[in-house]
Structures are given as structure tokens and as C-alpha cells.
Image 1 (cartoon, helix red, strand yellow):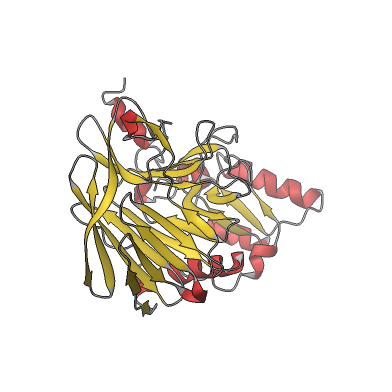
Image 2 (cartoon, one colour; image 1 turned 60 degrees about the horizontal axis):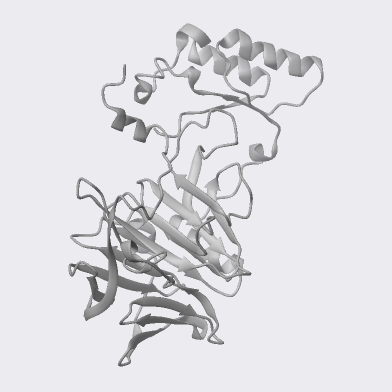
Length: 363
């Protein structure tokens, strides 16, 4: 019997609507103050419940825009090592009466309207690449259909940050990692939370979801968090791209350029670029749901030899771990099922076969 059903939320994602009548919302209304610190621009924003939040903007010389939205504090960046190798770009700010204008690379501009609050990214020809959603709608959502930026307030007073952008008629969205679904993500609702996907592809579970998407309007965003992140991309009830984080802040890295290649290059500048691919990666890999023991594994190898099927790498699902359901993090080899670890490697080496050991994604 499960004593605490709330623990199940960490086993698989539960789909919940972003904008729900059973919750309260605090939406950014206006910019009430601004200041500079350490080459970053800080904007104090006033919410619909009259509380304050902070919006911090930092630019990098390769074109990355870092936007951080928080109330109390922002968590340390998970990409600090790579950020240290990137040069900061001095923010060229023009303070107009009704909006801020920030000059970016290649004559692009970031325009931030003071009241009502809105962020717009313009290309070199002043064509909109993205802008936060300001479509009017429901009184319970502070007169928005999908509010541009704010907080969803839970029944236990937990504050979850969200952001919404217009989805253009001709705009297509790609990304979100390994999801086993359509390549074009328009029209989906999904939660990024890595879990065992049970070997089927007709649901939202995935081994390797990623809170990153790219637009055909030549922009993209990475939500820098290890917490659950939910996305609505042109869902049946809205023409917006919305995302919500279970973390108490938003740490966003926006990528913008003239080609998709530039966007991906900015992403790898941030997260690290791949090394040269091993020759083994181009070989023939064999995988299935579980070899329960060494006998099953060896039967597969012998069958491949018998039919002259080339085999370079064979994958072992997590049954190679001892007590994998309760003590996976001990990383103890399951000798009861697969015999001596050294002996197994020696035997596979005689067949010129490498082994890829899998672990569950929640580790």
C-alpha cells in the first residue's frame, strides 16, 4: 500500500492545466524600477497582487540572452563552467518613455514595454521573432487568456513561474528531447521529467526529455532547471507557447540568429560541444528489453554468429544491477544473474563485442 501518494509525482509526470480556475495567479503588470550590477540589467516588476519580482538580463558575446526571473534568489547556474569561458557583452540600453530598447548582435533588438509589460525580439528588419503573449481573456487569469509572465500560486502557497509567447500562424516548434512523438511539436502538451517509458510510445513518458525548443522564426530557449517543466505549444485552447517550471525561479537562455545552425552553436557554447565520435558509434548495436541472465545474453550472441549478423555493441538493461529496484545507486554488479564481471568482459572481448550498460534515467 502506498502511504504517500504525493511521492508518485516523482515517478511519472501528471498532466495538469497551466491556467486552472482552482489556482491563483500573480501576473507581471509593469516595470517599476531598474538598475545595473555586474554588467547585468535588473528590472523590478510589479505583479497583479502588488508584490514585486526581479527580472535580470545578461548578454553574451556569442549572442546568448540570459533572462532570470525570481523573487527571493536565483539558483547557481548549472553551466557555470562554460559560462566562464564566454565573454559578457555590454548591454547597450536606450531608455524610452514607454519601453526599454536593448541592441543585440546583427542589429537585432530586444524591446521591453514598461506598462503593460511585454518583451519582443525583433530581427534586423524589425520583424517580430517572438513576443510575450498579451491576448485578452479571462478575469480569473488577470484578464489574459495566457498571461505573459508571472506565478501560479498553489494551495500550499508554492509559487511556480511561467512564461507565454505568441505562436505565429506560420511558426513551427521543434525540440523537447527524446519524446517518441511528432517531430513538429505544435499542438502538444508535455511535461519534461525523465522516467522509464515502459517501452511504448503513445504517452508522455520518455528517457531523455529536454526543456529546450527551437522555432522556425530562428529563435530558441533552454529552461535551465532540473525540476519538472511543463510545456503547452499551441494546445487546443490557445495560440501560445507557454512553459511552467516547478522550480521557484526561471533561468532562461535564449538563442537567436539567422540560421538554425547558429542557434545550435550557441546552445553547445553553453552546454559543451561534443568530442569526436568513436568509430564504435557507427557500428551495429543490439538492444532489447532485458537480458535476464548471462544465458539469455549469450544465446543472443550465438544466434547472431549463426546467421552471420555483424554485432559491435550489445546493450544490457538495468538488470545487470544488483537490487536495482531498491539499491540502484549502489551500482553493484549482479553476479547472481551474469556471473563474474571480469569473465563476462573477457568472453565478450574474444567476440570483439563491446558492452553498453544502461541505468534508469531517474538516477
